[in-house]
Amino acid sequence: MKPKPMHSGVKAALEYGPTIAFVAAYLIFRNETYLIAGTSYTGFVVVIAAFIPIFLLAMGVLWFLTGKLARIQVATAIMLLVFGGLSVWLNDPRLFKMKPTVIYLALALILGVGLLRGQSWLEYIMEDMIPLKPEGWKILTQRVIALFLLSAAANELVWRTQSEEFWVLFETLAMPIVVLGFFLTQIGLFVEYATFKPTKKKKKR
Image 1 (cartoon, rainbow, N blue to C red):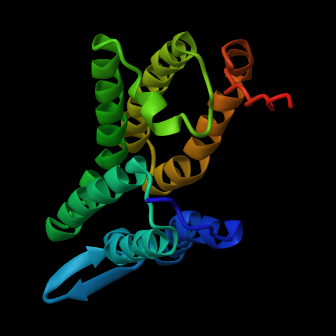
Image 2 (cartoon, helix red, strand yellow):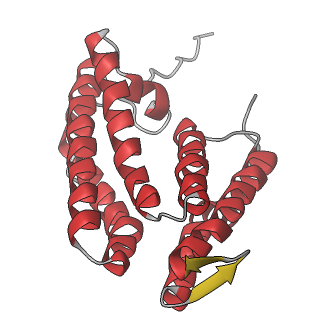
């Protein structure tokens, strides 16, 4: 099914709005404690509980308006539902902090399996955004795997050694900048292995 056209501002609001709202809510309620049904919950756990339906609703609206969701968005939603739900149910925010580690490792494993099969599954996800030759996809996939493994290690190091507030800001603000910086450093690869579909020549009369 062909994706429906959508205003870039609305799309950005649905994709990034919930995360921005999560950070803002956390900074406001992080020092609060709430007694719910006889159980005491920190502000962080309460914000997680509120964030899950907001994120899923935003993804649902995005799917309704465009007719399509990226596979990484679907995977993130599932991980959020599992780890976020367990964090609230068990009243243990550490599980939520482990979520990025599991996502990074799972993506690295999936891409690694693809390479062992002689395929770049990264191409399957990003071929519409970055036209590359097969060798280029192979190199980029290897580098992205390294990025995911380093990101998983960084997440574990930060949440286990730093404050909760530092981890929230690191994961929601710093990591997107790191990923953007990574792809900017790959411009040379994109140029070297770029491929373009040949345009059809007009028939001479």
